[in-house]
Amino acid sequence: MYKAELAEAILRALAPWGQLPESDLARRLSPVLAAHLRGTVFTEMAQQGLITVQMVGDERVIRLTEQGRRAVTAGPARAEDL
Image (cartoon, rainbow, N blue to C red):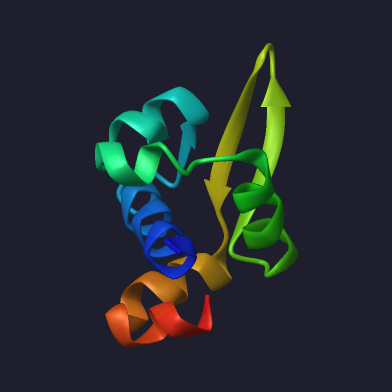
């Protein structure tokens, strides 16, 4: 339901920093979108080449890739492709 909107919000949240721990990323999303945040979302976005995910300690760190950065700059019209 929220897949494209969630992916777009994740990319926008990562854009200023390049990478964030999952807990920080979740705080930067709306409560509605944060409720849909699951590991499968990160897996799908990583398979699309938009992000990378690495475990650091007990938390995932999500890093924006160059392809993900291009998707952010492409704007909302690109959201349907995510």
